Image 1 (cartoon, rainbow, N blue to C red):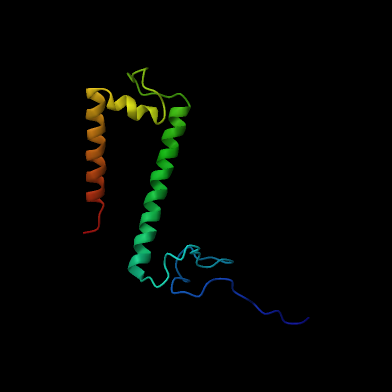
Image 2: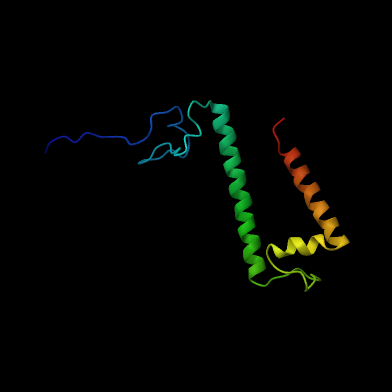
Length: 116
């Protein structure tokens, strides 16, 4: 048999050896966000991707739980499911307090998890 040349379709870049770069694509960066990027930028984008993926998974679980009809005990029956709940929260004083608590929690979570 005649010898067959092995070819690699991966782009030759500095991140070809990173975790997740697998055959046949190798390091996959279709938007070119890491052209001329250093290791620090690569690590930052990887961290952001993981964070967004985790938030998305939690959002899907929350949506599916609500869509299945489950409600917390003593949950008001007049609050709609989905995005309609935001408007319902903003229409009462208790709802506004809940929104303020949520914003405070998100701000503290961002500050605590930030690399100093």
